[in-house]
Image (cartoon, rainbow over all chains, first blue to last red; front, side, top):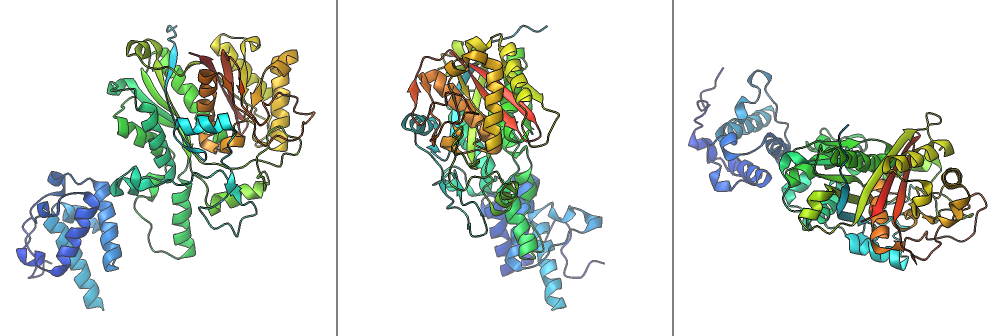
Length: 103
Length: 400
């Protein structure tokens, strides 16, 4: 069930990008992919940015290390959350929030 | 039958314990400089044997950017650095006419670090690049990517003969017309606790130095590095005004099909004869043999027996040296570095010395060019590689 705060797929709310943790996530993606930080806007797709899957895998690994969290790959949406930068950020933030709630 | 083309060795590249680049290897040969010393790169307190031929002063970040390095085990880094040197003068290659064949190494340092963190530190996950860095074809693929070569690319697995098999197959592919240019040889970086402990258990490592053919030899010394050759269609190399270091003449290989680790003189002799037959030469044409020469009791005795069988009464007139006494036993890279040494011997008219030689061994009745390089006009040479598993590979190279 979509929760009320969730942005619609493909058009993440800018509000989530103002989350300070989003900045940390994007810093890591920029560093691991070599893509200029300014290009990492919510609607940009990883494909259009030319970020190969191996770089993305490495970025997710570094994000996990940074936040000390395990980022799940949701089986029934395999890869879907990693199509856009916004989707990636959203997925990570959601995971972090879950972890925070679980205490 | 496809007409055979001549094959030029038109590029050489090397990384070894005696330095970076062909000039440093050549000076070590000429001056009798040995790259073996106490292991500096890892903690040795759990090792029985504390010496190796390490590549010192290698700064990966000087050669690769941070993102590239994530995907590169040290063995692939060595391969790329040596391949860049070898390809420096080759210029553009039509993508589908260029290939890469390298000896299969295993990314031992990456495996060692990953298993330490998994078993030793109970890590919950491993770095995502662990598999792409450790796969035995990683270096070959990285080299193909670096030079945009889209022809055949693979890694040959035959332990300490891997790089010789790689060069032999690459030479056959250029000779047959399948490829115009092949980057071949091998690289290895295995100086880590896990792998050295495994070698320790075999009781073939020397605690005090590499002394091939010397009666007081005590075993082999593991080294690391890369030896890369560019093999090129002879006419193409001539047409572009390449400086040709030597000629690839032939390749012989076979299996002992006997013991897993103990070498066989018959098997070694068969491979030497096969290389000569492939090159269209006879034992009397051979002016130098770069021996496998590991400095184990058994190898040097068996290899000498094989040489006696091939060269008969002429053996005393055929210099046979082991350059492992200079750069150590570089395992999957050994055949590559030694092929570079052999090509340099032909090019420079200089017999590489066997360092560390002290006492003649009646069971190794060869002229091993003891301790000092010796000038000599060389028309053709063999480079021997004999591996665990009873796998033998011999390259025949000629003066260009």
